[in-house]
Length: 120
Picture (cartoon, rainbow, N blue to C red):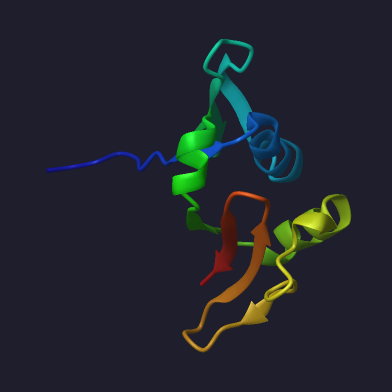
């Protein structure tokens, strides 16, 4: 049995909040766009990754995901994000930190989810 990707579904009260962190801050692109439909939805893509964003207030209240994006150059990612969107830096991990398990990490958050950026 083989799999090619894991594609998370992320729910927001307002899909524009998700677009701010993923498109504006992290540089994802909209690959499929139904943002202006009755049930706003879009597929975001970057470097072979894919995320489905939905506007659904009921689901957003039930799901508050946290996930990790792994990079080979955390300093570059941190430099860009901390300058362009410092409001997304998580107060508990707002700088690149060597963790006890050997990974370098910093974290982002918006009103719906947490994202750890990690380099091994």
